[in-house]
Length: 380
Image (cartoon, rainbow, N blue to C red; front, side):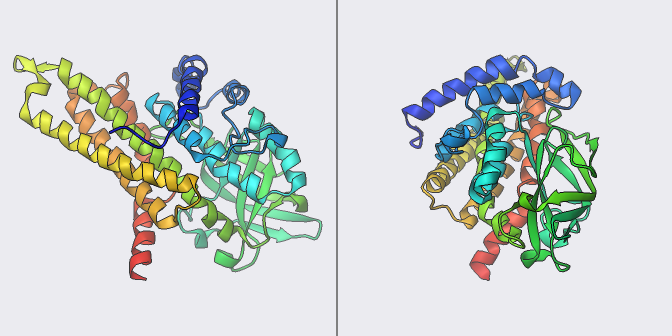
């Protein structure tokens, strides 16, 4: 089915993204995976190409275009290229809205130009060893010391944690914490007491640095409070729909790409003297996956349209996120199986897709949390 959500300008942007991937990412990606981190030059190259800060106002060096469909193009092309390590979606779609929507004019002047050029890599630190999807469990504290905040605690599983120059930290600013006692503090590289732990060894997305962060009596200037004091819970809930849609867009693109490469493989691979594609079981597997992708694509594209128009609610974003990511997971499993022994070899894209995509049902809110949000909306 022909997609209806993109215009000529989106198609032109897609060509730009593909050129960037071919020139600046894919030739270096194997080395980044060995290193466990993306070269900073790639971030600066993305900035020069205009891929960073798409929605940031032009006065701060951004693209000045809040159309979410451009972010969808980025998510789709990076997924199809098998290059999730350069976490542009995290930078643009998750952290960007906090800086453009909550920062003061002074903060925007300080942070957004580097955000758009790639000189300033960003991260957001919510997850702790004992608190993941449940923000009520956050223990990191920020004590008001009059002219500064005193930040103490630790975070884990922080994407861009090693590279980040600017980290938005979720911390308790009241003893109770929770929905009415969390704030967002921006910690900058080099701040005394801010330390990075291990670059964590993951089963997939090897090029994407994921770290532990530690805060020992970190003095955070009062002017680095982002948004309202004790208002982090509302701020976080406001922006989660976009994060989940970005993940959903990448997930359905990943499932479709798996379908494409597996369809090509079963046409070429022979068993019992004929191509696998001639076997009824294989044809049924491909038919089922193609149908699931087509149905999911229609729903996700509708959600993208609604979000671009400012009409998407949290429930439908949660539906798109859990359904598309679970489909991606199933597709990776079935497509690897159809590749046989070759599917288990990391030189084959299906093997990398299997491990790289496994996190999709976990971060941005687990499948179980998504179902809870939907269930509550229906049942109270």
